[in-house]
Image (tube, rainbow, N blue to C red; front, top):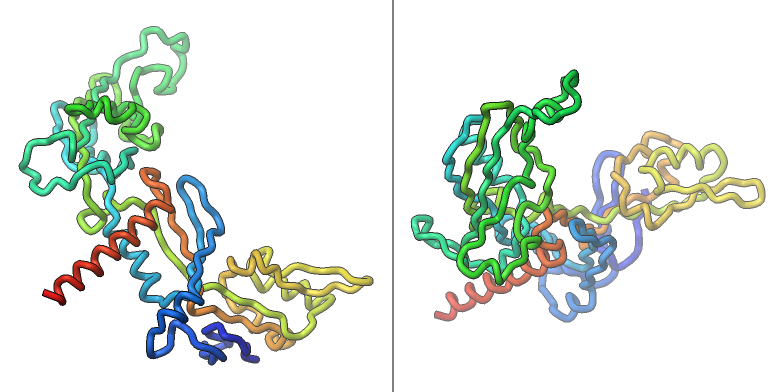
Length: 338
């Protein structure tokens, strides 16, 4: 297996082990940290971004920093979630404790930056640290239905399904003037909470507070946040004909494309799709192909993915993680100085 002579710190994937490739220049893995080298090497490249998902590259950064951002996003960036449930009436088949747990897992539209942490859970609620909701619903026979012969619950009963859209916001103090109705409430209106039949009823008061994932997973602002090293695949010997088609099947879809030139077919790496290869190393099973490809992973290039639950945009979540890290560092320096 050949090595790659460049400045990138990387590992070469061989059949039975990985080999460190020695870079030709300074990297973030050098024994002595150099801020000038870091500024020269470090980049952030946004690959994909929308209201809930973001994929971006952290280039020229040490693994401990990438993992720090991941942990901060999961455990330290705060959000709002239902934390207390007052059950005034619940005659459904779902136990009170299970129902309260379900309520807490419903993601809410509420910017946590506009609220304070509730330091004492026994303190009275106020508009600065709490959002209040209510859920009042009762299942009845649908006497107005034109489908008497139907066996579907939607035709026979009213309110047979309880969804998150039935949760109503109850403003506290001056919250009505501060927030619009569309800015507060469940993010998704079609989350199924319970199924009911005539005689079943729910009357709940819900209180949402601000906290983070270290307190409970329901306060984490993301569905997931993860990273992986950038795969780098290079064809070092021409692969053509049937061998090119066989090489294509050894990698994830789209990684290897077939280029035709004068009745000949050549295997070519698609750089845009190579980043999504699963690094299965299937090509190493074929004696006629394993010396034609060099597979490696760049150790200081991280493909970072953030999937927000919807309360905060993923780019905002990442910025909040950076702010929290900065505050932690300043707090540590202050402690050391004093």
